[in-house]
Amino acid sequence: MENIKKIKIDLKDNPYEIIIGSKLIDRLPDIISNFLGRRNIYIICDEGLGSIILPKIKNVLDESGYNVFVSLIPSGETSKNFKVVENTISELLDKGIERTDTLIALGGGVIGDLAGFISSIIFRGIDFIQIPTTLLAQVDSSVGGKTAINVKQGKNLVGAFHQPKIVISDVNLLTSLPEREIKCGLAEIIKYGVLGDRKFFNWLINNRTDLLNLNQEKLTLAVENSCSMKSEIVQNDEFEKGERALLNLGHTFGHAIEKHFSGNDIVLHGEAISIGMTYAAKFSSSHGKLSREECEEIINLLKDYSLPTSLEDIGGNISQEEIMKLLKHDKKRINEKNTLILLKEIGKAYISNDIDDKDLVNFFSQEKIK
Image 1 (tube, one colour):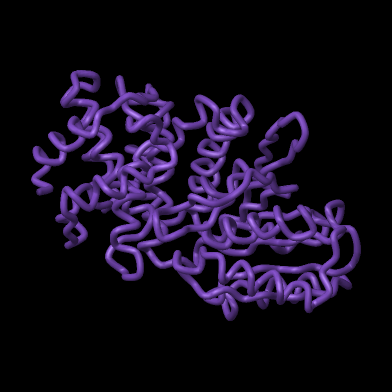
Image 2 (cartoon, rainbow, N blue to C red; image 1 turned 90 degrees about the vertical axis):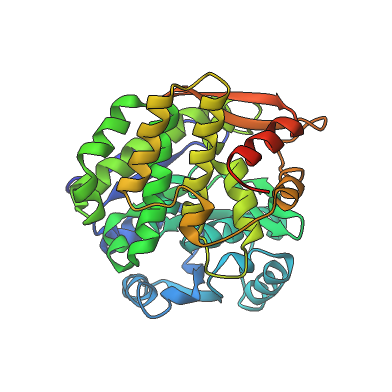
């Protein structure tokens, strides 16, 4: 396999590999054969892929003698709920899934979260494989074993840690994505440069055009670097007891924004994280940590990738009262104090877990959120 990158996540109980490259789907039967208990394969797939990616994957597996069963899930974040989980489990049981079978998550972050959560609870836990089909999922949600669904109080508040057996990231699949989805993935890639690697941050500045044009070689490198950074953090802190929280840079603000606008097309996850990173950078700068110049560098890079850096950019509005209410349901909040991932400089993030509500209220007032 040419230009194939492999990253080992060396966890004590559940080590696995991330395979990154182009046209991996053509070799899928060989890649997954060691992880299957029998010739039945159960796929949970975003229904939006039903006529795009799924037919080719199903054909490749059919030709190799596998019996393929597919459960289609409605596209979008609103599918991450208990009702969809219950219905999908019922459908899988009706199709004959057994405890020695392996579930395949085929889709973006929503499918990865759903399928991972389902695989963690059906028969008290079965194996699953991640085949992320969006750039955002390839560099973020498919890696690390965090699975979750949403409830009315907020995003990802119910879930489990359940590691996949393997992650297969085929960058060739990204050519079917809308431009907006590509940019959402690039927001998460930028996050890795901002939080932990100044050299990678500079590389993203210099390779913007190639990445936006889906250059396969540059995309492979970007995904590899992002996954390498995440895997190192996950290995050190599998269950998010410490430094793994650094991966939430931009997510505290971003999840609140995303939750507020859920159910419409105003903001996607990566766009919300871009705004959240902007707020994290500005908050860090206003508290004397991050220099004003580096704060502007971060904002300018996000803008160069045509990502939103303010609520104004998405044409949305949220009140100070509403965003504070949402932040109080953030899973990192402890003893009525807020936890934010902040920046000392580009490439050096840190965890601040004692931020008062009044500090946030003052910050939102400066940002003209009233």
